[in-house]
Length: 166
Image 1 (cartoon, helix red, strand yellow):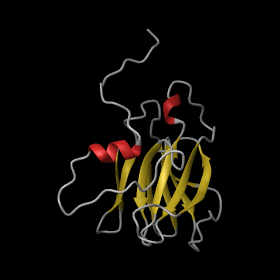
Image 2: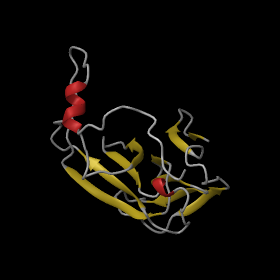
Image 3: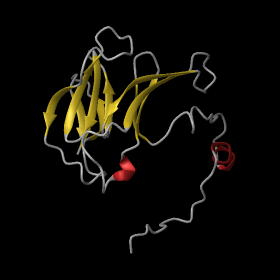
Image 4: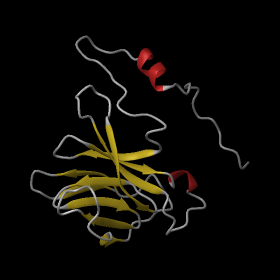
């Protein structure tokens, strides 16, 4: 009691070891775009119109029993591969003022962020990768006690609406 149980016998592999064990179809290749220590605890990501990857790192996920609303333990980083070799070359911190995060979408002048109990909008109208102000609450009411069943998996629909899962 009080200890976590191992539910898998899968080995913990370093990125290079994982790629070496993959069965990669002919004509395809796998690169390690980013790995620890450059990235940690990724819970969601999205691509922007410039081909960059926006990654939500949720360092509060493991603290589900002791999570305190208001503790900024998560962040959004922007990774870019400037020379098209399949590995990131630049990394920018967009914000580290997030208490818990579960989903992300970029568009319409900012970042839409699932941060239970709220859906937030972080404005960046000029697209300089720096928030233009504080996050705005668009909707609220999502639970955060069950970390697996909250707002996530954002995607823009062809109608311009933002869709997600609960």
